Length: 244
Picture 1 (cartoon, rainbow, N blue to C red):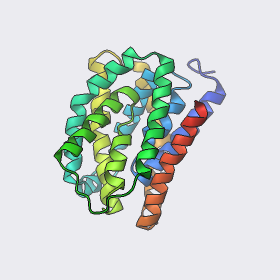
Picture 2: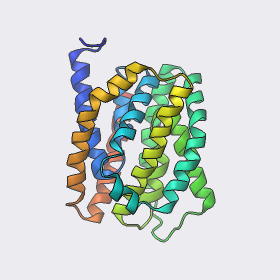
Picture 3: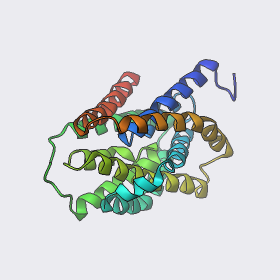
Picture 4: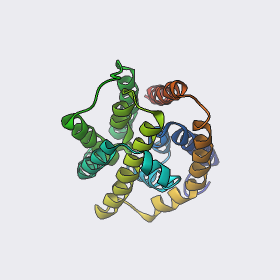
């Protein structure tokens, strides 16, 4: 047993981190959606959210030049609005008890999958209201669940844009929101050194998984990528449903 965790819990955490890193490298999202619910089984939800934000922020610096070059302009608007909404998400997390927080985090994963199943809008160009609303929702979920992705994924996946652009745009949003989420947690007194050491201990697994996922991304066609991205959300939703 280490830091109050059994060897089984540690093995589960390491495996989940590697898989979540691979999915993030391949799909452009999924790290927090897959990892935070697993971590929340071993540590309090607030700590799981903090660890997820730290890991998402740290891994965002891998391949950052190409990522920024491929990012759609809308991503920076969404990220900027999301940062303003993050504190409200942390406040909501404080109001909810651990049991309710775990339930809501699971429902977030399910809701994301349902959103991706909605009819696609190949010729749709999101307006200012939709873009701002996506940013607000992403910020709230960053603070509450460490999951900026659920509102962002449908915003890009339901449109007919190149996978490289969708993937890079989502990653850039996560770079900003998860970095801001970790910073705001420190300012609000919700972060502790334990979460930082926990995140640093898991980071090599995330980095390895992300590297493998990035290599796989360059070898699949756009249609297959969209099916995989939808499948990631489906798997997360199924896992969350089973935990309920």
